[in-house]
Amino acid sequence: MLWQAISAVRDLGRLHDIASVLIRYGFGDLVRRVGMAGALERGGRALHWQAPEELARLEPPARVRRALEDLGPSFVKLGQVLATRVDLFPPEWITEFGKLQDAVPALPFDALRPQLSEDLGQAPETLFARLETEALAAASLAQVHRAWLADGTPVVLKVRRPGIRPVVEADLRLLSRLAEIVEAEAPDLRRYRPKEVVRQFTQALRRELDFAIEGRHAERIAANFTDWPEILVPRIHWAWTSERLIVEDYVEGIPGRDLAAVDAAGLDRKYLARRGAQAVLKMMLEDGFFHADPHPGNVFYLPGPRIAFLDFGMVGRLSEERRYQLALLLDGLVNHDAAKVADVLLEWSSDAQADGEAIAPDIDAFVDQYHGVPLKRLDLAAMLSDLVAILREHGLALPPDLALMTKAFITLEGLGRQLDPDFDMAGEAAPFIERALFNHASPAALARRAWREINDTLALVSRLPQDLRQLLRAARRGKVQVQVDVPPLKQFGDRLDRAISRLALAIVTAALIVGSAIVMTIEHDTALPGLPSFGLMGFIAAVVGGLWVLMSIWRSGK
Image: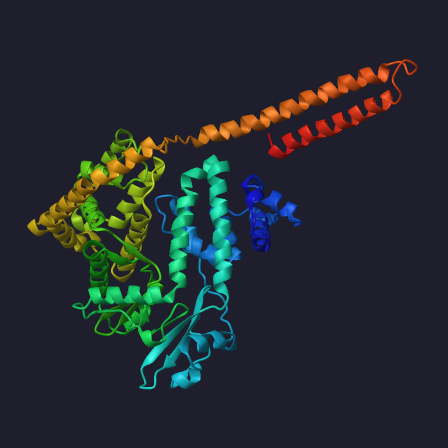
């Protein structure tokens, strides 16, 4: 098993914790299949294989969610990323992943003080006119404290938990190894693309650990809404912001989930729903840079009315081509054009061998069921959910950027319908779709794409003589090699090699038994002195060889 290749002894304790939690929730078979048990036994670690009956009776999605919660911050964040993969997991799994909360007890402020003083360059009490040592909120990676600058400006300090990065890095190393093993050893789990999910998660979590990146995200989105006074993004105070600390303006408003307070404040729910939807559609279809987690906890309502977006640790990016494809898809859904929808979905699919003929009838039937439905009654979020379900049934998956976008879009419409049950997402999206399609076909856009293609072609032609010279020079020196890598064939060869080794040892063992039996039957008076002892040694060697073959077969599980 690949777990034998684990060389970092410092990760062995964490590996034991992960295996113990998985066993506790009834995933002992997975621990065995991926070889975690063998690695721990070789490291002198014992596992208790009895899973509590009440936990084993939970449905698989609930058991996985509970296990991720017990495994700690990195795995909670992994579950939150999995909640965005509506293209890989059915609704019941997405619902469970969506319940993952990384709220944990806050650390005492004295535990933060040394790191905070180091990041600020001075004691926090000397820098701020007032600082609340009791946390406003606490999560697995950071906790938030309220403070006031010398000029009276209220701010919040988001402080990364001390010592969290080494724990996260150890988890990421183990997750990377686990993903490789799952793809190699568990074919039934391969469809979930564990290596791709872990790669996406690793990038997202490392960015989220750097609060300076979050600050730059906030400033970029704020700049995109300069002409939208009703959209508020907290100002970042860069004088005190760094990798482990972000200082931003304090926003005093009504959390998105507190609808009773919205009504009590006399805010216009319909306006908030429309303007919030327009803001996120602008991010997606016009800016190509969007808040990827616009859930009610990250959205505040203020008098005016205004909408504040908070927490830009998770953002999504859409290239110009992706935005055009998204506009085509939405246009196809709104106008019941099945061929257009199918073309975009196949273009999005990460599987180059996707069968368009197999998926087209399902998309035709899906679009046809909305034929004649008024625009106002279209539920775009439900339509997108049904579309990714079709992809899932055909074993196809979306690229990570589009999975984030789909999840954000579904969350957005749910938030809008909470504010206004008659919220018309399709109607709000229509102008943005039209502008995106028009802008893609505008003379300026066509000229820009043509100029880019001309530049790429000229660069390729100009490099061609040099590339040919290098290729010919390498050919003359015999350095040109053609390598064909067929992983299944290599795996078959490895298994065949192991089988032949066992067979060879079995033959040698049988020969020792026969030879030793012959030696033992020779008359003592005619035999060379000590000959029976050689026979006994042969029998012992045969027993050892036979036991080795049996143990090898038993350990392989086949």
